[in-house]
Image (cartoon, rainbow, N blue to C red; front, side, top):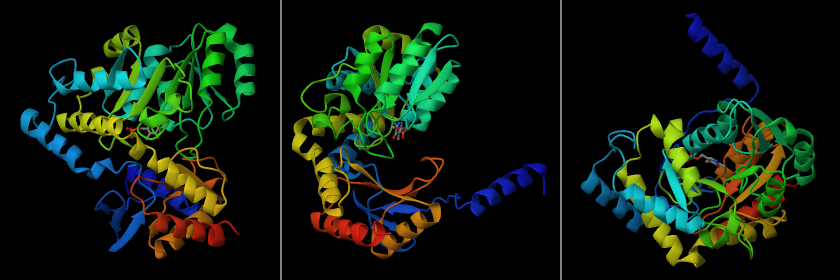
Length: 384
Ligand SMILES: *Cc1c(COP(=O)(O)O)cnc(C)c1O
């Protein structure tokens, strides 16, 4: 065996020994909620397709028409010739939804965070991240070559303490957080975070990958409740409730101008296929026209948590925390035997000792299936 293969095999053996090995299961998604895996048909509670838009006829048609008109791919970076005419429309729509002056679309949410943060922070700066923030916010923070610190999850006192102790040593400070936490489903206290940011002349960036389309009438987590929090840097993805693919940031005109000029993942990466951009525009149209539909995923999640006797859901994401990796895999397998797809999420995606089933609710999940799932979770999983 070559040293390269030996290296890979020993890493794999180690993962297997710790129940942390992952395999990609081929999954055929038949519609918004049913999937076929290993010859079995399962009702999926593990897709981020909150509005079932990946399969929506009008959205698929918009994507098909864009392929006919503009082609299958964009052909180059947006700064060369990849900036097809649909981009301007999508960016104007996103800025309008988020009530910012401008927006910039990226190849994906991960690419957005990897590109944005190094534009705004450098070696003299501090990035303060919620400890449960998404991996790609940390990837962006590391690429910035600034100092990276974490504050305890949603802990405003801890953030304030770190700010008081460290603000003076850095030129700029960027606070980064998920708007809706991807593995826990809770929301960030954006109003309070924005106050702290303003008080210390720091900049707040929210990653609303799981907020757009489903929280705050579909506008996202900075629109949750009665008042709008004017978060200056609102990032998100087109790959979840929007049902397509891509990432974005909404911000002021000068910030977006700078990002277009400096974000390496915009400059050195090919523009999105026209079909993704067209599908995203069609999805935003539907959300704007049908806010009641956009509210369904959270309503369904809440119905589930009430029946399962879990804390009230705040978003379409509900964690069922089990703890040990093996027990979590067994619970996932048991639910598969009952006809449900509920993926086991293990470290390093979540902190050690908090392995869980991560359930996601979508607009089209039938109420009776949700009730039965809640009963199984309450009586067979949470009792242990
Ligand atoms: C999924 C996710 C991303 C990455 O977005 P992609 O478009 O899938 O690359 C970023 N942030 C959070 C919080 C996410 O959940």
